[in-house]
Structures are given as structure tokens and as C-alpha cells.
Amino acid sequence: MFTKILIANRGEIALRIIQACREMGIASLAVYSDADQDALHTRFADEAIHIGPALSRKSYLNLDRIMAAARKNGVDAIHPGYGFLSENATFAQACEAEGIAFIGPSSDCLARAGDKARIRGIVAGTDVPIIPGSTAALVDVESACQAAQKIGYPVIIKASGGGGGRGMRVAYNQQALIEAFEVAGGEARAAFGNPDLYLEKYIERPRHIEIQILADRQGHCIHLGERECSIQKRYQKLIEEAPSPFVDDDLRRDMGRAAIEVAQAVGYQNAGTIEFLVDAQKNFYFMEVNARIQVEHPVTEWVTGIDLIRQQIRIADGQPLPFKQTDIKIQGWSMECRINAADPENDFMPSPGEVNRLLLPHGPGVRVDTMLYPGCMVPPFYDSLICKLSVWDEDRPAVIRRMGRALMACQIEGIDVTVPFHRRVLADPDFIRGDFDTHFLKRFETSESGSRQS
Image (cartoon, rainbow, N blue to C red):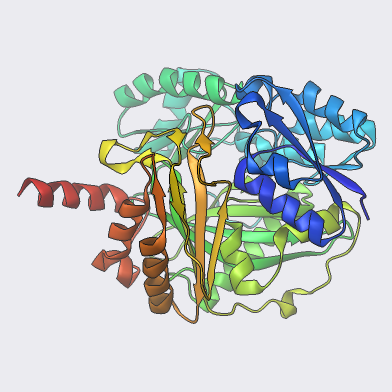
């Protein structure tokens, strides 16, 4: 087993990995920027090392500085968390060259999975349904128009080198596509350093459902069921749950098998997520591979009892999975609210600043993943996610009530947060019935706006 792991990340996910390391008897090394010198992950790790200024590209995205810290401090593995360099094939390759284990897929696998256009081409060679679209990067706007003409409007442009909603535009006609192409390419270049785009048929009002997988180095791959991720704004997820209120046993079985087939086609190892869009008739289509741990992994941990971070470390150490597919049982229901330092009354404008009062919920079936403490500063340089509140109970109605209770007890003052917004969503009749899709929040906010005006 590893003796020391460097955690190439910050915030709640760094703390989560530190926790797993401590429980496994592994020393942890945190890295931090100028903005994070007083952050909790620097205090709770066994060691911490400064890697640069506040800007991500000079610290958490600075591969050379992170690798220098790893060499200097004698680590034998690096856990990248999510975001930053977690899906960077060059980073994984640098680890491999140094003889340091990268806790994630191989660099070759990351190169295949990280190029969204390339992975579409790989999956197109399997039996897994795929959304009609281009199977290679678009060379120019003319090729985009030709592809759109072939598959029919509406279409959606996506960035080949990333996700999270950046570099994505929907076009309902050719003129809109021409206008969107340059904008999407610029966004993709700025966000991922890669301006390449690909194009898909735009599915109206789908569900966004993902399957968690685990794959070891011995060739064993299993799935841990689905997560419902349709409650999102500008392609950023805000509420996730497991299982999905939409997925039945047959669909879960078929999507699970498809996820494993995708993982095997790409040569996947470690923990990963295969994302699908599902239409109203329960037809599902492969969307992308997320080759890392997901923000929403706690809901899967709740309903399966499996520590995903621990399994990531075990797999990277060369250990086989300790269970088979038939051992996986979904127990009860779980839900996660992503609490952001943002103002939902002002189009979710980020709200950095000092947290001057903090009360967090607790009690049976409640979990809080956060880096907050009274008096801490939420810096303006990074993602606005500051807290993941997740709950478990026997069924979905009970989970909604428990989450409502937990949100009532969650008090974060000094900055704007999304807690009141989450409380309103949980009280919505359509949400309570499980009757929603990826456009739910657009309709919800329109309804709320109308109610306030009347």
C-alpha cells in the first residue's frame, strides 16, 4: 500500500481524500495557493506545501510545481480529485514517468476519454446507443453546417476537450449555428486550452442520468447504479440523487451493462462515470465519460455503502475489486444539494467573502462535505461550490423531508448562498413527484418570477 499521497486539489474534495488516507493509514500531503494558506485542507493533512499564487494556472493547474512538490516530498501516489488536472493526460503521463501512481485512469485512457469527439467515435463502434452527431472534431463552421444538415436541427455544439457547460451552444437553424460556432470555440479555448468542437443532435427535455463504475487492473468492471442529475442550471448540476425516480429495474440493468461496455471499450481503470441522456420513452444515449471521481459521489456511497475514494486508492495500488456485480445492492435513497457561494436572486452571481457565522446540520442520515469554518474566507478565484449537503433515508419522500430539515438547519452568513433556493426547489410539486428533466429549473425560475410579479 502507498505510504504518502499528494492531493492535487483544494476545498472539500481535498478534505475528503485526506479523511480516506487517514483511515487507511496513509500519510497525506496537501498543496495550497496564496489564497488557501489558511484553508482547512492545509491544517488537516499530515503535511502541506505552498505551490504558487492564487490564480489556478499558477498553482493548482501548474503541473510543474505540483510534480516538483511530489518529488521533493517523496510521495508514491497523487490523487487529483475532480476539476483542475484530474482529467489531464499530460499530468498522468508525468506521474507515470516519475514512477508515481496517478490515482485515476492511465494517461492513454485519459487521452481517449478526455477528447469528447474521439470517445464518440470509440463508442460508435460498440452496441451502446449514441446521440447522432459528428464522430470527429469539426474543422470549420462549414463542416458544422454540413453535419447539422445531415442530422437535422436543433443541434448542440460541445467542446471536445472539456465539459461543465463551457463551449456549449444550442442552435435551431443554420444562422444560429454560424453565430454560435465562433463563440463556443472561444469559450472552449479559454476554459480547456482546446478550441475543438463537435456537434450532436439536441434532444429536447431529456433526463441526465449517469452510471458510476469501478474497474480494476485485473479486468473486472462493475457498476454501482445510477445518479439522477437533471436538476441543473447552465449545465451545472445543483441537486443529485440516487437512485433516479425515473429509472426502473430494466432500464438500470441496460444502462449498467452499457456503461461497462463503454468502460471496456476505452480501457478504463479506477472509478469513473458514464453519462447518458434519457428521453421520455426511456431511450438512453451515451453522452460522455467523466474519468475521475464526481462531485456527487456521496449519494452513491450512501446507497451502496462503498467508500469510492478508498476504492480509487486500492485500485491504483493494483488491488482487485473486493466485490462482484451481484454483491451490489441499492439500499434506500440519497440526495445531495450543492451549496454554492452565489446569489440565486442575481442569476447565481458568485459571492466570495468572509463567513462570519456558520451552523451546519447534523443528525441521523445527514452528511456535510465542506471546507467552511467561522471566519474563513471564500476566495473569488475558484469554483463557487462551498458545501455538499447529502442525506439518506428509506425512500424518496423521507429523503425530501430529511433534506428539508437539514437545509433549515444550515446557516451560512456573511456571503450569499443557495440554501434558500434549494429549499424552494424541494417544495415544488413537480420535483416532489419526480416529474422533471434538464429544463426543470428554467420553468421553475420562470414560474417563481411570475409569482413575484403578480
